[in-house]
Amino acid sequence: MKNLLVLKLITAVLILSIIFSLFSCMNEDRIEVPPVKLEDVNGNYKGRLITMQGEFRAEKIVDFKIKKDTLTFPEFPIKEIVMAVVKDPVKTQNALTAMGKVKYNLRYTSVLNADKNWVELNFAPKELELQIPVDGVTKKAIVTLVAKQKGYFVGLDHTLRFALAAEKITVDGTVLNPFEAIYYNFPYCIKN
Image (spheres, rainbow, N blue to C red):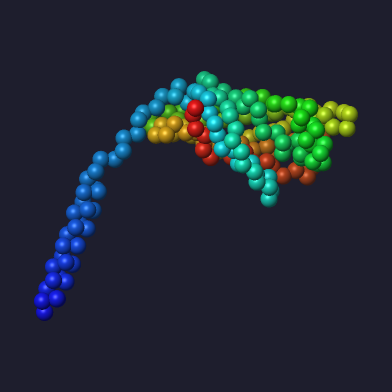
């Protein structure tokens, strides 16, 4: 009988503790997200790039900068594009070495959300023109890039997320066929 009374008392104390814990959590103030301005997006970034094409998947860190209304890649990742055109791994590497760094500017417009805690970026990719040297000739490749989702700059941690895709490649006026789209996903980019 005495054990039953102690057990009931412990159970009652435990239930009251849980109830008070729940009420105290409900009354805590939410974390205040600092407001952002459209200009806060500007700066130098280091981002995680996940490149996917069919079963192929690769990850690397890339650098880019944003100024006013343009995101600039000083070295756009073109390896998969060149591989789709050239096909041979050795010739692809030789072409990449000969081409060097390829700069790409990605224009966008931006909108601040109502709470002023994130910025939405609407990208307007232009075609990427590449001169690919292979077997003593230069192939002109026009790559059609599209924005697969809007970009988001989050005020809480000053990170940026966006995605692009190379959906079509035209080589010397002929559409490359077969061609599987190349996806460039930037799930987490931090401002330097």
